[in-house]
Image 1 (cartoon, rainbow, N blue to C red):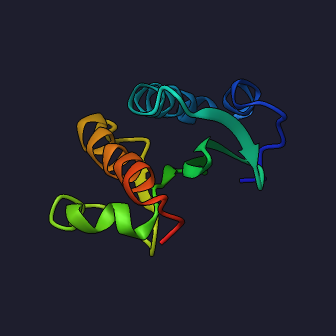
Image 2: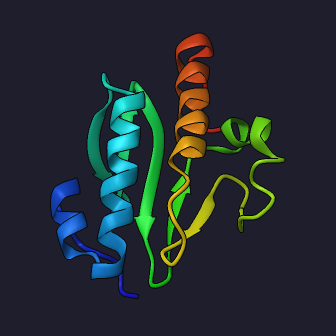
Length: 123
């Protein structure tokens, strides 16, 4: 899939493939609730939420949504992530499966705590 070019997160979601939009809207809502003080932006062509630093990013791909909360935020949830394809600091959520919003909420909350408690960078 070609990279989505958008100036705002709303425009990014609107330009995403139809199968991605539901997941994008859902993850956006979860992340905004976990980090209500964070601001949304487009960085490197991806939606991000930032509060002094980038908290997390997410992106639409042809078959999945990619959530990037940082490796350190993912570490405590290693067992919960066994069924998902993960990278160093990212998790893939296929569009043909329900988005695990409770897990995303917990991981996002971990990242927010890291930032607020330690002024953590992308670790």
